[in-house]
Image 1 (cartoon, rainbow, N blue to C red):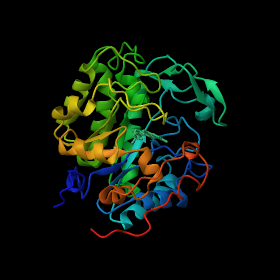
Image 2: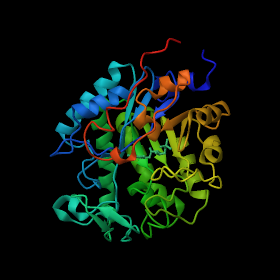
Image 3: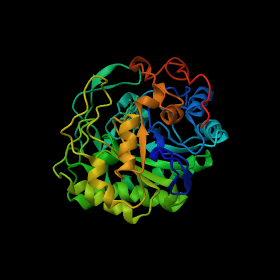
Image 4: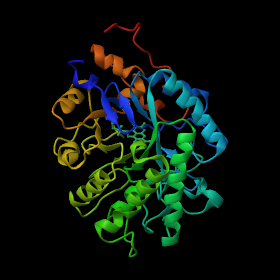
Length: 373
Ligand SMILES: Cc1cc2nc3c(=O)[nH]c(=O)nc-3n(C[C@H](O)[C@H](O)[C@H](O)COP(=O)(O)O)c2cc1C
């Protein structure tokens, strides 16, 4: 067994990892058009980042056309998309790696130019996020006021998530990560700033958590709880999120997730602002991993502003079982190997994060030659 805590095996639901360096979900806007279809370039990108016994989580993936909120983001609801993802999962499995599909519905973080029939985006309540968003043609415009979903529509959204989980398994994924973070639909339901509903899905913490938990239950029923992970961003402010509950909301949600025996819980630390590379980590931000680790018995993944040494310390202290890296995985396709041998990390180029082709996507260098253990 390795002396390095990052290189000890870890059971994550139905899969057994051989190390604890996870690739965080990263939207890169490079699906083939028309149809938002994953293609060979995406397979090459994920294949480059796969490692034996390592876990990758895909970019957020639309569960339906209504779930769509950014141009060039892939889906998992058509047969062409499922087939496209098959090349991705094959490339990862060929290297002995594992891959989960992050499935999302963006809710109000969309624009009518990207919605079926040009309709308004949907949300728990008719409250726009503050600030600007992009249109289908990359214009910057203020957020539109979304349409509040009717209660009867929520059962369809639950079923759409469950079907996406089934589709992901058909595409060869090892499981799904339900995107409950970063101000998208499920987070919009959780938080008081965006949810003013008066039905069973609004008001109390229990009511606001209902949609997320119904989605988890429905997906678990279809593919098994041991293939379902959930991502949350406790206290996160991205996409104009805020709430009045302090820790109580997160404690309730995480305790409920624990009861369900899901594969893993993935929390984003609020200290890191991934939209900036110059903002320092917020030393005053609450520490999500320390706050919630004890409430969840499955695998606990923490993300947000980690470097190899801080990741190693967090796992050694038992704050988390595994660490997800976002930006460092963009620019270091062989990140686990670099961490293992202590090699220098390549810096990322933010200008090529979203959209485009190979540049800044599949052309980051790997170490010249593998270093033997
Ligand atoms: C380019 C980019 C795209 C991202 N896309 C997603 C996404 O699709 N889903 C998600 O949950 N988080 C997304 N995030 C957040 C990352 O998963 C991660 O939580 C964040 O970058 C902090 O980790 P880091 O400091 O290691 O980069 C994205 C971040 C970046 C920089």
